[in-house]
Length: 173
Image 1 (cartoon, rainbow, N blue to C red):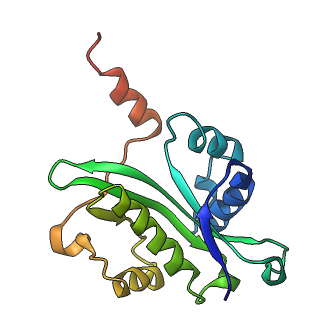
Image 2 (image 1 turned 45 degrees about the vertical axis):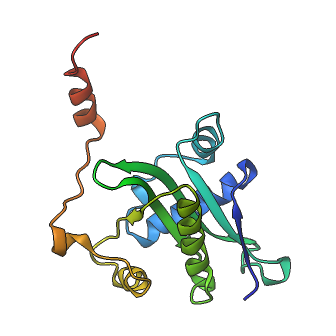
Image 3 (image 1 turned 60 degrees about the horizontal axis):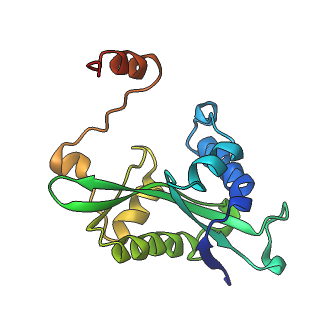
């Protein structure tokens, strides 16, 4: 299928927001999405963006049943490993169901890897839900290592009141 991967523009944020919700529905967590295109515009297209994003776009003649030409996205940001150095973290990789199996996901993933390599990143990291076997298999087929069993890492999060409480315990300036 004919498609192109390009850097997202501020004007794409409504489409990205739509696909974020589609991904959340697929992951059985639609109630977890608390942001809209406005936050994406603010946080991704400012002086010091919190993330970068790529979109996959098909020509008008291949648009989706609903009329969309932006059919996938990859949202990522940079992190730093005190052991390895520069890293890129892939927060989301999504392709609309009717466009899967056509190389679009691989194109987005490969482009994130290329962008990371150009910035001297030594690794690309991401997380996948344990039940999402098709996605885990997709990444494994590309050479990704599942560190859950081999290294025993657990993914830990502070949010809501727990984050507030932790921040309130910070030493005063």
